[in-house]
Image (cartoon, rainbow, N blue to C red; front, side, top):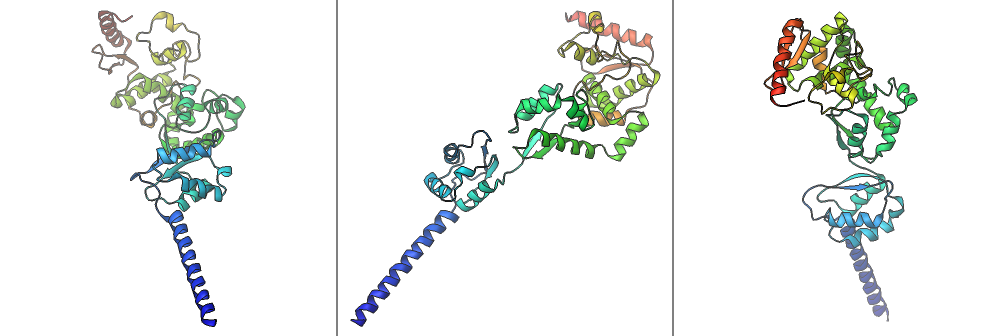
Length: 345
């Protein structure tokens, strides 16, 4: 009887140990074994207004290559994740297991996105470009940048706020709110405007904002890199002499039409503070968001005596520069003859 009892106890113990081992093996398999078939990193978005667990499972299966999505569904529910989804942009890396995946999602450990913007003229263009890359709503960002009180609170106004955005590539979290993004851009602006750059601006007797305004005009005037500091020097010469800038790109901005190929007399009469044929000095704000290259071209402008410029008649995108009005008139006549020859009105 005692032997039988012992055998039963041993048998029960063995069964228990086998069951525990099996459960441990299963738990290890579910938690720690790689669950994705993809050999490259995939990315998953979870939107604030669309925290749909079922949709997430579909994306993990169809886009990220999750092998057996039922495992994830079961484990996620055990860990009470579906009711606590955090919005963000998440990296699904090769070899990732369920434990690491769920810990990342539950803690909101997203990866930053590379935010870029360049070749921007209008605030609406800027907010649209940014909202295409981030979760934030275009209207929310546009509303802040159009709010005079808000802009003044960070040292700008609604016409100069564009200068706080220095075109570059920035690492930001995909779900960053609009106000936090602007705060980040303000910090980047302060970092960009080093003591060296500020000293150069002071030597030109212009503020950083005014340097950006002038750089925006210079950038619209020429796409030829080596001409940028020359054009900048020309306009600085005009500012020093108290001459109107008479920059055609500002007239296009005032007209609301950057596609104009020829500036006519009727365009020069547009009553706008951006029309530098009518109003002396710099316009109240930039006509585009200038590149770092253009800003530095103004800060390191070429010292010369040019006061006039005209597009070359070969339509190369380059310019003829002149010191005197007489010389400039000859250059302009050649260019206008070339325009007429191509039927450009």
